[in-house]
Length: 398
Image (cartoon, rainbow, N blue to C red; front, top):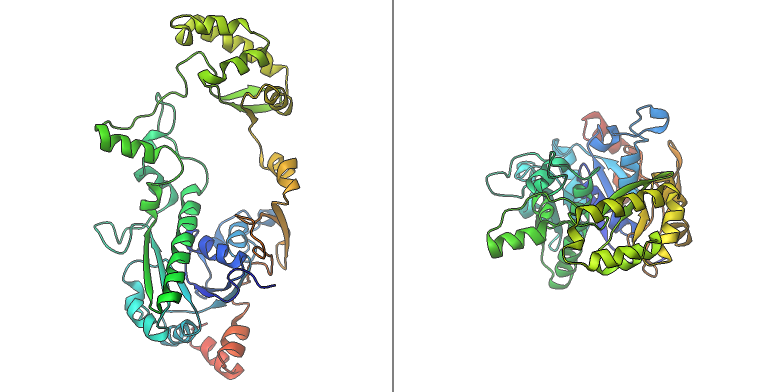
């Protein structure tokens, strides 16, 4: 099948989450992505979970998630042979994605100026914690660090400590941003016939992520007001996460939706109280609504609360576990979840494509085992013999 990027070859030299996630997006839509790892492998191979909780560099769930639809080789770029082999690959590639510290590729003789000699319109996409220059350029980074620098003081209960949103949310967002910027640079390079070097800083992406940061940054620019953590709601209307019979639900109640809440709870008199001066912030009314809501929720499961509230167009949504999410009829009906068999980890279920496009997404092959395609790519495609490959291995280049 001819996919969107089926005529594009990408060398993924990056480690961790952002670069590999970006490369996987291209791979999902047809690009020939070659995962280039050092002989010891990408760092995510050593991050769990693992099947049966037994560490195995070929079965890390994170690595498999980030590297499906890619082929894989090993190259030690610190060796002259490894660097030379990479230059050969660049000559037949369109995009190189890397996450080394600024200046490292130059020291290896693989910087932007050297790579554009191999391919005149190559795109070099560099993703680093803080960018290629500036006082922080050589600092390392992590998801929680980006979140802290990006305004973590805005999230959490105002009476407690700031909190970070779960997992690697920022690093995946960085991968998304990198894929958009890389696609733009690629089309520019292809049409203009000249190389492009893309410099993306993870910490800068964090400033524009999908919470209140941008709103508060602009507010500070306009008024000088500093950000602060705020309670979810000081009004009588319920807002936030509440317990029910079998878990929790997320409730959103704005003044415009108060009548929906009152009807769902079977308490129309709440509307009369809310209409009185100061009623919205009446402690007594807040207590009455809280009591009625508690009774209503404790008589219902998450699914029942969702269905009953939905009948009145009141936003009450179940807080799902992973199991709930994978069994949700909506996502199943859209075939969002996809299953792929891996020779070591076995059959696993993954999130599907980010967007549905005709002749777009396809599962072609699972994440590569370490050095799985050395013979296919370095041998058959670049023309090196088995003797050459043995020699490369002998000097530690592969």
